Structure formats: C-alpha cells, structure tokens
Image (cartoon, rainbow, N blue to C red; front, side, top):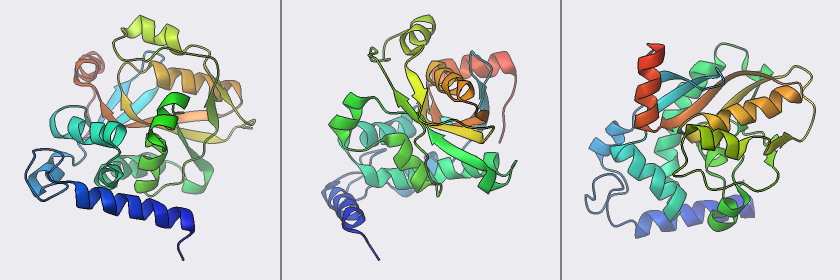
Amino acid sequence: MFSLVSFHGVGAELLALLLAATCAGCDEPETMLCTSCREAIRPAQREWISPGGLRVQVAMAFESVAARCIRRVKDDGETMLARPLGESLGVVLRGVLADSPRESVIVVPVPTMRGAYRRRGYRVPDLLIRRAGAVPRRLLSTRGRRTDQRGLDVADRAKNVRGTMHVRRAGHGRAVVLVDDVVTTGATFDEAARALRDAGYDVVAAVALAATPRHSERNANASGTRRK
C-alpha cells in the first residue's frame, strides 16, 4: 500500500516523464532515455583509490551520456532517471556487499549540503541507493560552512571539507560502505570515512556512481587496477 508521501513521489516522477520531450542522453524525441543511451550507462566497473587510501568502486565515468543523465537528476529534478542510474549503481554495490553478509553492512550515503537539499527537495545519493535496491542509513551530517567544491583543486577540496562531517551515533565496530553520486578527487569520501572511523565504524569500502574522467584516468594510471 502506498503512503501519501510515496504516492506524491511517484506522481512527480510520472509528471517529469510526461514532460520529458527528449532523451536525456542524445535528445531523441519522445523518450526519457533511448535504447542506445541506456546501454551507454551500463556499469563498467573500475577500482579507484582516494588520496586517503580508501578503495572506491566506480560504476562509470562522468562523461558523455552518463554526465548528462546525472546532471539532469541533480540540476533539473528529473528523478525518473535515477532508476536506470540506480540499476547500474546496484550492480556495483551488490558486488561490494557480497563480500560480507548484507545484514552486517550499513550502506551510508555521503551527506548532501543543506543548500543543495533545500534547492532540490531530495538527496541524490540517498535516492540512488534506494533505486539500487538498498536502504540508505543517514549516519553522517555536515557542520559548519564550506565552499562549493566545483572548481577547487585536490588540495583545496581536501582543506574545504576537512572537519565538516560528524556522525550521529557510535558505531561499535559496525561495517560501513559509503556511497556517493560522483567522485572527483576523493576528498569528500576521505572526510566521510574519517568521521565514521572516529565514531567507531569500520569503513570497508566506498561506491560511486561515476568518477570525473580527469581524476579517474590519473588514478587508474597510478594504481594500475581496473575491474570489469
């Protein structure tokens, strides 16, 4: 049985679908996402290492069709696109969770900045986790003020997020997988992992829907790791 909230959520998505005149990936008319663009966002998993040494499993590169779809979820409110994107995230997330019994691992989204949440009315990482078939546990919250990360280099991003996250409750050794929509330098993942570890959680891995190509390629060249 639908709750009123879930009914309104589905209604908003259906309205967005009806209003979507073109494919999010290629502008083909009369479709939300054409067959070829759906194929383009199938997961092509690779392992990515953050500056702090956190292993991040990435589903796709943040470029071309994937980038356009993610931007339309984040910037244009087209949450129906979270379904196919979440399916790709789910393939990677299930693989990570398979390393440990599902019941013993908490899936924790990276927190959304307050301004972004007020603007959108939803949290993108949480939405993607649900569409991936998992339950997000919002253990992390932000404190203080930080600059928008866009345009900042690796060092400035790390400085910008340092000390900005805290955890709502003690972990007592519980295992955690962190999830975010896009990873650029890894600074946000590292800060989230730092806060969770300080609170007694065991951060076993991280998963991102997409990684920006510039940092993704550099990371792949440095680590020499790639998964299919």
